[in-house]
Image 1 (cartoon, rainbow, N blue to C red):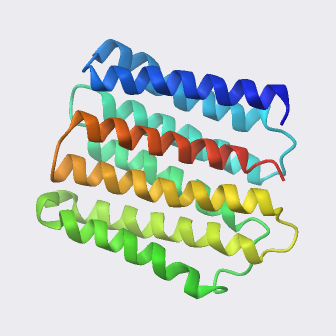
Image 2 (image 1 turned 180 degrees about the vertical axis):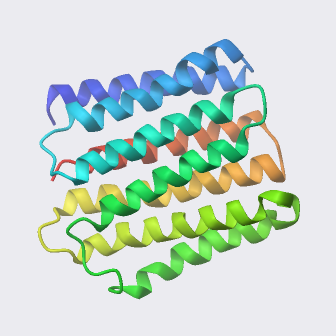
Image 3 (image 1 turned 90 degrees about the vertical axis):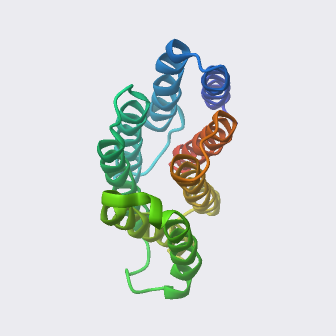
Length: 217
């Protein structure tokens, strides 16, 4: 592993540690600094530090991280901007969906790979459905995009020219993104907890780092 990649991983881990500690302590200033900083470091890693990477795959991953950064900022602001944050993360999932479709098999290929992602996303939506209120349709739409993103990440395993490491990293990242979103939904709509938020962030940034590293073909 190149020194630049090691530096990227160390910087992301250090910033994530500070962000998670700030969340646990309810330190708003620390959260405002280190939460967006961590995602920004991952974005820089995907854009510059983990080259070589194939275009347009790398550009779409960077776009997904940029939308994720916007979502991070919107979700941490004092006023409730959950709907706007959800929209930003929807754009992130669509960018990842497009990235994982680059060079992959046709959209109708490997349909069985969709089933576990659809079941998981649907199960999370069902678990919080009563508490969603006016957010039911947006959250359901986001769950569809999330399941499709995971499916295309899995389908990359059947794509010619996609390196095994890139495939496995992207698939692991997609699975962990679904897990972090499930934790977020339960925390927000069922059982609020700063500790659960800390775990969620750890899973979320691990997922984003894996997707960023997947640009290395």
